[in-house]
Image (tube, rainbow, N blue to C red; front, side, top):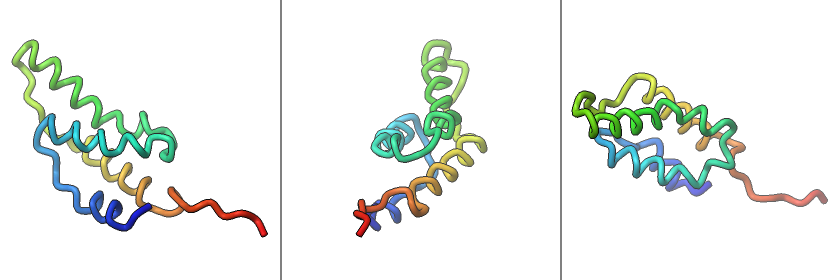
Length: 93
């Protein structure tokens, strides 16, 4: 994984809106196949989108970055940035 991608994820600011969340999830979509149980790990973050969609219909729930979403983001960041998530293929010699 490129070092600039690792530093980008480590320096990612706290999400403040639905659009911030969509940008983050869009960027992380590339890594779906590299993170074990990606859907389960990202569930608290994805649930925020469901809540915000319901809020648009009912105007009752405001989007809010939760503790569970923060923990999920930290776990996802570790899963992507820690070795050996992405390594160059090495042939056996």
